[in-house]
Length: 191
Ligand SMILES: Cc1cc2nc3c(=O)[nH]c(=O)nc-3n(C[C@H](O)[C@H](O)[C@H](O)COP(=O)(O)O)c2cc1C
Image (cartoon, rainbow, N blue to C red; front, side, top):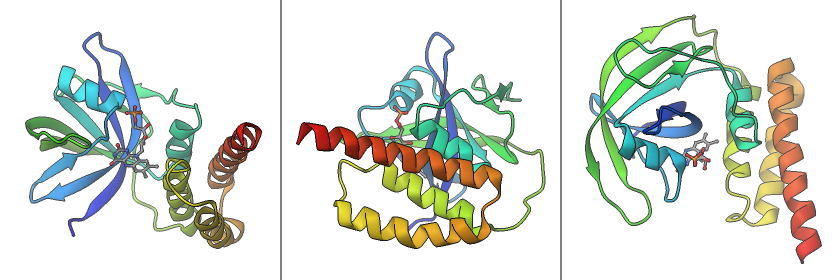
């Protein structure tokens, strides 16, 4: 299995509107593959503007925020691509699409790294951050996963949040739990 890094990917449409989304980028030698499911804004944007930025951040509120309607995160101009980067990223990689492997469900955009920059140091692992990332993935798949699986995984992940979260991790976790509750309330009403 190839290595996947969970990043915040910035892309841009033909009119210059920036889109921010959490995506796992897939290692492919010196290159990275971005594989957005259809339909998605990231997919449309990569076709309109064949550049992206992979933003490496430990602010897990960006991951949780993008999934809960909080997508207004500050951006800054990139150095060598037209797509802006996340202003608060620890580091970022500027990517140019070199080719596309078409697929009915999940086209793959092969990207070359044209520029890499570091802005702040990596400060070590934090279990609550990892737990928020896992919970964000669960929250993005509520319609696909059985409720029991989601509940048992959340119960396990919550221990790491209770023991090791700082305020940002706790806030991100709370946004995700609020979304899951709202989804279930809606589902309960319709069932
Ligand atoms: C950690 C993480 C990794 C994700 N990786 C992917 C991915 O590789 N491909 C994808 O289509 N969606 C992925 N998602 C879900 C997208 O972030 C979400 O569906 C998003 O809305 C993409 O659609 P958009 O471009 O229309 O915003 C991921 C979510 C999380 C939290």
